[in-house]
Figure 1 (spheres, one colour):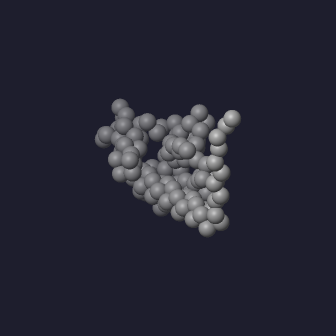
Figure 2 (tube, rainbow, N blue to C red; figure 1 turned 90 degrees about the horizontal axis):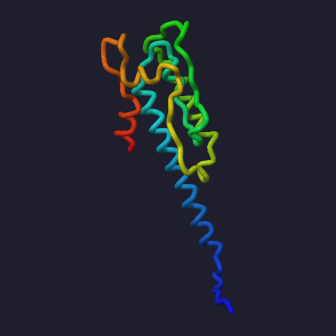
Figure 3 (cartoon, helix red, strand yellow; figure 1 turned 30 degrees about the vertical axis):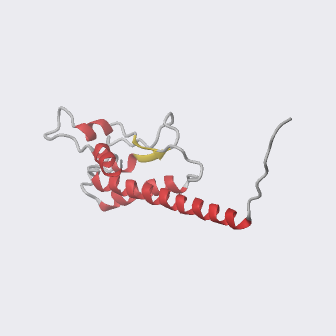
Length: 139
């Protein structure tokens, strides 16, 4: 013979749990938006390909945005590119069901992302280390 107990959940408790879920979703949204802002603020702008290639992905086996800088005009420090990069990330966040997301990855799939990050043989300076800085700031 099995033993069991039944608990009755009061409507007021359901409301409180719903409120906690909403607050948690707001906190996750805020954290992701702050991460996006940091990534965009730290990103260099040459042609705009790198800064507009950031994306949030919940499935790391799929590719995110990956724009090439090949044959793109130089747009050194163009605020429109930064705005586009931020808008892309906010659209990614808005497309998520934040109540069900368990893991999310910020990534950049531009063909030259590694060179921007760590530098390259033809660069006169080291890389920008955007992702290391984002990790250091946001954990």
